[in-house]
Image 1 (cartoon, protein in one colour):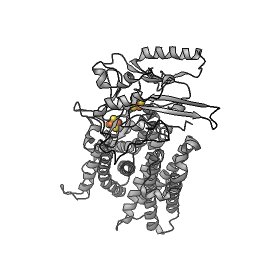
Image 2 (image 1 turned 90 degrees about the vertical axis):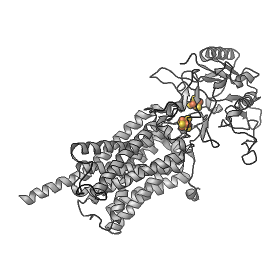
Image 3 (image 1 turned 180 degrees about the vertical axis):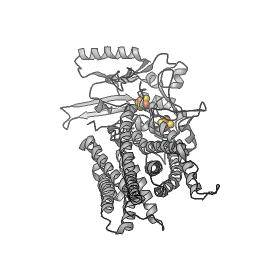
Image 4 (image 1 turned 60 degrees about the vertical axis):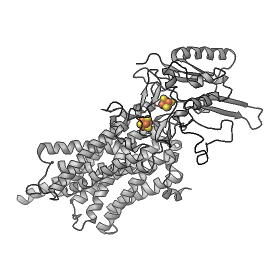
Length: 282
Length: 316
Ligand code: SF4
Ligand code: SF4
């Protein structure tokens, strides 16, 4: 039973790229992750080395990732800005990963978050293929998938997620999704007033919207000031199950054609033979 | 549909999955052709159906093993069917992988019974006087063949629907993968039967109206259908989205391996048996089987940017 959906409102305009959230996440969840230092020589961590971003993307061991988007023109005078965005699982309302998971490992919790039950997952990776945001990732070290849990273990004892608690600028705000959305819309209005006309919310109802249920959106949503693609977010992700009826219809049609081909190939000659036999008899 | 950018991570479905799609397709294709023969064919066509039963079951077993090996936690393969925390069956009709797991299990049951039937009929298993049929008798037998063929069709095509029910580039941008895999399964299933019967010492003569000729006839039309579907997929995806399929390494494999060697050449060999009937048929069947494998390779691997190392030489 969902009491009230919990999530994050991430206001990217106030993120300073300090990565406190990323560190807090890694620290709180270290019991669920392989020891980073144990095999450091055989498996050095993947660091970009070309940007302050360094970890590059979300992964099975980095459930939070602060994206550094560097927008500099050749001469650095036309345009020069850094966009920063602290990213994690969106805990989608219509979660593609959860939808396709055949084992029931992915569940929706009482906080309306999407949670991988590690004791159930068998590493089929269908969820990896389904997540439009490249969030859920396969862990080579244990053959299962991993992602942000919205600190399920902390929520159960009344704490807020570690990242939100650590964030010094309130870029990550934790709370009830409906309240957060109101706050976010106010913030967008304020920014518009101050001349930041590009500000908008990514992850309101329109994203992954299902007309059948009238539901959609991301429980973890963002305030952005450039196109979603600039932040590595898809403009138009799809709900996997919605593709099934069309695929099925074409498959059935083809099955029908192949069936007919088979029937005609094996039947017309039979008819001919029957005719031949009859001709012989008469 | 023109959106080229995708931010999804790839599931890294590699060799095991390609092999599963391919072998499962052959099993399913051969099996539903057998059902058609069972339902409307002549008694003399039945040798083909029996061969189909002989290959379908072992192939399905291999498929099961391949799928298990592909899992991150192979020992948890049964989680596909049973929700481990409650000990209850789990079935999500909206998830192709969940439905597919059940369908494969049931299809396994069908192919097993048909396998036994073929053994009894050909007196490999002694029962009564032998030579009689265990399952395929009367109305119930026909019902069995019909329902079995539906599962065959399902196994041949759901793999395409499974790829589409994701957020991966190419896969999720066409609804025709299931249709394409079905056509390819039918064609490779028939090719496998053609190959086996042509390699047998007492092969059925490929004279006019013989079972092998009918099969060849059916395969030709199915290959044409496959060709049309490949064209439709590329056309509807558009050049930009389809680029990974039609250019570079995978492009070479698609145009040369799948289309030319796997479809066009076999069609020519079927129409103009330049190597003699038997030689042409054997070569054509081998080429069809090769093409079917490469088709899965291109469509499964290209969107994920994965390679088979032995094909890597083809990389530009
Ligand atoms: S962002 Fe990806 S992993 Fe998170 S709930 Fe949505 S689909 Fe699942
Ligand atoms: S990898 Fe695990 S969580 Fe993901 S779909 Fe498969 S069983 Fe479910």
